[in-house]
Length: 531
Image 1 (cartoon, rainbow, N blue to C red):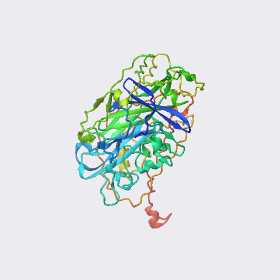
Image 2: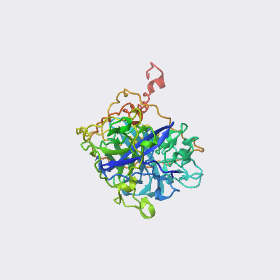
Image 3: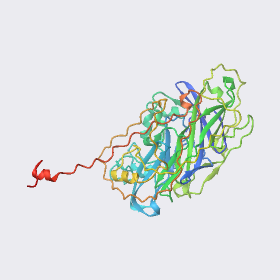
Image 4: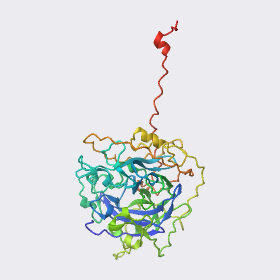
């Protein structure tokens, strides 16, 4: 809980979106981060459609509403992310609704050329399961285990985990977000007191690792998204053994008003980067968050500033309002819950409609002293906004529908039989393309991922389940890469990322068959006949 009320920044979402902003300090400089969210409903083997947006999440949302449990959703109020978090919450489902004792579940995110994420977990339960939560209560861990104090199996004999890493049964396995309260994430604070981050304006010190703000497991952090990626899920949907769907090419933007005294024109546009993808298997929707930051000279400008934010789709530009015009807000939806706040018991079609005003908080400005001229250079990372509405991105042609076998992504090692089974499944709904040349601009160096602690004991043997017969989905169109958003100046934090580097080469193939043995030479020697 924040120790003081944050200075208010007026934020208004445009269209079917939710938006928020926060101020923070780093190295003595004041920054403002604007964020906007859009939500898309599941659609098998095709492009997802925009639906009512998820509300802004201001605090971590725990499973069942209990602080003693792991988290279902992390907060949206994050100053900056170095990579994109890909998160899944929901259940594992047995193939065809028939009970099984063990099965594999898989989550993948693919662009037209790159594998951004491809991760497989094993789900096991004695006596069988039809539906089992993918959460950290069912993963390896336990009291005193810093990587997952919510789990089972630590210390030895304290229980049996159901969600397992296919290679190391004593490694925490899951697709969901990591709470900022667990020791493994809290140690990234370094010497920074957590109270500094809970102020109205968080103070970020040099020794704090920016990875602290990443809620996804390290192997679920990837390059910023372009908004047209394919999502592939195996065993994570109640009726489809394999679910494939595509983000619709969405892009987020913000416009900043009220800073004309800084030498900037009204309606300055701030490009945003897609840095969070939340996939909710129970509610059957995906939510994408776009974020961008810019510096301001002092807190005095915060009350007079007004931010408008929206999400555009191909053929559906953002309808920016005229100056001074009233803006209507689309209703937002909150994460649904069943009886006693337990989302596991809620019906899939049940959602809660909330007004955006309730979820966003007040947006009126505060009374301040008359404006005074500020001699501050124009350092904000904006580009001038075009006159009128944003231009509509060009429509993409409909490509051909071939299939291709899956290539390994390198996110984790799998047992040989699991890899063989995965290779037989046509997961990516497009033809594999040859690797492209690296981007002209080098990718900025990012902090190294925290290393996983060494296992304290030998891993117990994990039985490998029989591969499930996942039905192959029909062929779908080949996605074309989306053109990156135009950069707004040279400010690296607010500029969309370059094309990711080519994937690593695949592992070497199977060993060659040994040469045929010359039995005659072995029996009679070289150059001798039978006689």
